[in-house]
Image 1 (cartoon, rainbow, N blue to C red):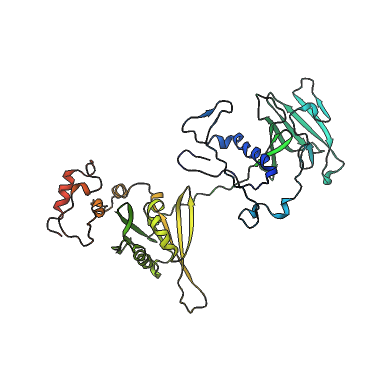
Image 2 (cartoon, rainbow, N blue to C red; image 1 turned 90 degrees about the horizontal axis):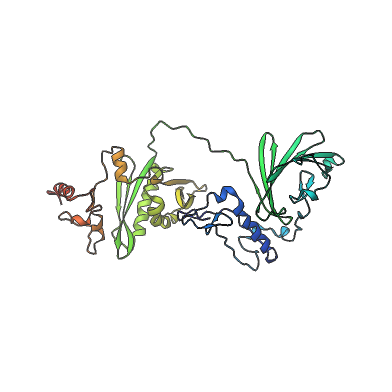
Length: 419
């Protein structure tokens, strides 16, 4: 499903089908369009609406892959061999639930043992249960007939309601009484459960069920300030049309450490040295915050991190919430391997603003300074450069009100007597 912001999200499980069942599978997938909660969230940036169905076009995508066999593939577990030739239960003549059977049509004229009231707003059904636990008992069902649907109350022999279901036409214009959805409600241990059965031409083509979900409880705010984390920043430069890391800086709240990567051909080796600096006892199990880690720093770091230990990811909506690096810390001759972990987090997901704005908002005593970032991209750039302050146009934000020529002039004064 296209969410309209460049992201796609799966809204169904992978289905495995034979060619003979392919048309049935298409019908099942087609019923997704009739799920209100889903269609309400479908993107429609171009407002391209199907007039007949009143649904947006082009926002649901079906992908399929033809296979000669599922054996030996990742899809094999989705359809065990023992089930591949299993006889599918026939729902074509009746709907059966908890031992009671009902026709799979909204045409009440074909329902057996149906007695209507004088004004035809209710009906009464009496039949025999098919459940072996209640074999021999009769049951009563009361049908409330409304303008565009009807509700069935299924009761036991004592008149207690076991469950209810309501039938709704899926295609009101065609008035096809065999194309409908049956919404079943029952209470189990005081919890209301909902199941929806979609029928077309007496065939069950789609089924959905609401599963009870426990909401995440809000944790109490920790009023104590923690220092159990580090910060890390990665700087890059452009060489031709390729971006290459040139420096990694680490700060643990007391001590800062920077690692230069002067050789563009072996920056991964230099980065490995920098990360190994973190893999010492004083930093075991620490959180490391990196601003915009998901969309920038991780691109360069993941390959290096993967060579140092096992990686585990927590990802949501294509963003890395947390990357865990787990590595062995015991000696080579030790029988019991001991491990430690580092947790890399994206601080931008917690504080979604630029570092400059955050420094201002939190009144940081050592704020982010202006820097001629494009100076690093010059072909003749030298890591050991000593000289005058680079040209104004090489600063990020030049020719804007954030970094005016007056600000540049004040910046130059700071370095008049310095290399």
